[in-house]
Image (cartoon, rainbow, N blue to C red; front, side, top):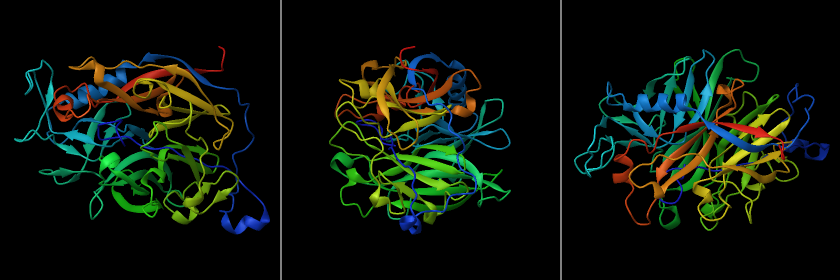
Length: 429
């Protein structure tokens, strides 16, 4: 995930819809036997407030501070989650710090706990990791690749350069109707770049298949390769949000234009059980579903006061679809401080908003003026009537030209997820 301005992480947006007509039937995946069913009422929904969720925030802080192992997670961003059939939760992180935590003072003399770096001051950072949480809500184990002596990313870097960032994941049948279940993980594939792409150019979207219950990586399948799109800013990466509706899985994504603060959102859909089947993917073109990703059109177009961040989240609230994002099209520093939302009665829109805003708390740290908030992600499996659980990531983003590593490594409160309970209500309440 493309961290905001000068970090190393962040993500993308997406879109979709429906169709019919015999003339275009050859282009479409036949609808499963069971559709979404009757639609519930669709009242507007906006963010109306929040409260801190200290328990989940502290659970990850304790896990990151635990020095009983030196190959495990001490911080990361991305922060997606999926509930497994046995009650465990699998958390997916993009860039991840490993090794151990040290007491103050750090190497710069600041009174903060700090992360291990090598002799040259380089942090032990890998491009992705997984963290397993037990049913009681305690993170217990970090999953990486490589070897115990030299841990690498769980999802290996592609041959020839580049890296993979995991985004949304879901549990689905191995094949439609099959009793065996697997975990499907959407991955963003990025490659090295320069200039506005200093932290990586979008390359394409892949789907990883993980076995259950042992979470063994079985396969990596390209589903939306974008490398042939000449302008990297027009390449769409899918998976920043994923919602199951009836027998369909809707996958949202976004483009990554460096010249504008706000991205556009796109949509794809796939029959349940076929997320790793490229032939089953269909992309919304503004009127119908198409098999060609190049024909996709935005469901939420960036411009003026509208648009999404490169990482956003989508949930269902009754019959209403709710999209939460950083306020990237807002004025001043809103895109790195404030979360806003849109709502719609179907995943392809029309999307209403932005409306409702919250400003989550940031750690004080050694330089609070340059601490940014980004990547809001909903975790509805933890809601249970207590309000929607929303995570967000924090990083240090300035001043321009200053190296981030000494600050991020020098205060472990940075580059760890924080959690809120957010309230959604009809406009005017």
